[in-house]
Image 1 (cartoon, rainbow over the protein chains, first blue to last red):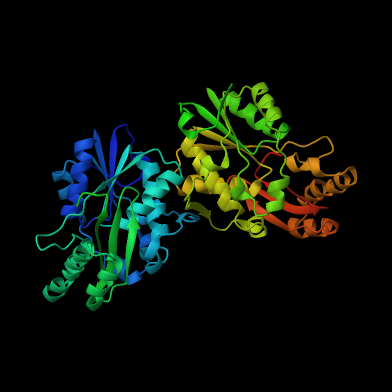
Image 2 (cartoon, one colour; image 1 turned 90 degrees about the horizontal axis):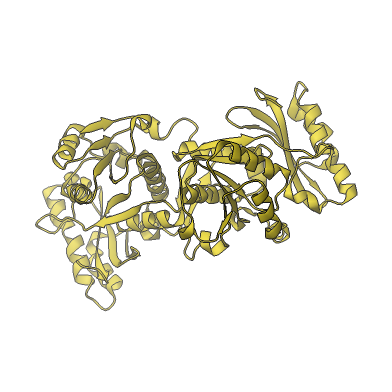
Length: 254
Length: 254
């Protein structure tokens, strides 16, 4: 496995699958890497905590980082190349061109500038790596919607593959931010997947989810259109940790 | 020469040079096409009056269109493929992803949204045609600066080639909008290149240009950094027609 830090040193090749990550890898990322490995001759994983997508400086500062562990996991999952640039490599002095997605739903309203940062860095990675396929987790539903639209609207020549959410045995969706939860907070966080799963079967899923998530003071409850399916999504704050999750509403295998 | 109207029907190939145009071709476009022809195995010309870059609906409505003549000129200049989509092909229903360049100078301030439209359509064309080189005229100086930054900032894998401004014998820079000038207006318009050329030699070129262009009520006089050279640029209104022009300041052959 090769670790590349400079854009100029990254080679492109046909048959490449790209898995963009911010590191702090968990079983959800492993599912993305395994899907890429199955479907691609060459797997590139990017490892970059993208400052442009953090709307909250303290969230950026607290974001967990452990490159040695991340590289070991990438190696285990059969990654060929890890692209791990520093911020100056992707945002050089004088950087002045952004990809701006419109209509980014409740998650976009809750995090001003977040999807601009996500869309910009993803387009940059697509152009640098030039993959045939790029892999994203369904847990970040609005992100999937934004990236699928970006690829269509800007005619990017690749396919977006969406991998189902991976959950712990208790049902909590895996997230790099879960490590910040205390035992008590984790117990309360389980109300998010449970509440969404129950509400998804109600006649008015959004109202039902709002009612049942009331105790978790959700940022929002929203229906997000992923293009091929709709999901019931919500964001909650457990102490100082913000968690998002979603469950299928229609037209989608669970 | 092939005329293609649908993205799905446009083939890509190595060694392609792209000349993006809005039609209404003149000798300035011929210079771009000739440069592309000299340097490329395959020349693609796009022909698309991009609604997203018109900040003024009456300017869009009045923009001259003559596809039969444009196709004949493209054929004369040895173009291999003309890509001439309609607006729905490039901006389908639900289009919601824009390329937003920051710091677009006095021209950007005078035309809100203009460079967003230019940057978005150019990135789309780059992704659809996938050229090795794309050709732009130096007459649109701020456009050159925006596109060069876009290519760098978003890591687009192509080279931008900039072709010197072509002028009529009297010195007026060629523009598709020149056909709207009456004989009297055209005489007054000559004050723009003459004023800029005189001012470029002054100790304070911007102040000198403002003074000499005073009678033409310029939108602005500005120095634009093209990356490899700086130019003295201005925009004036002659009757209802807006004209821009620029001359080299330093580091550049005339």
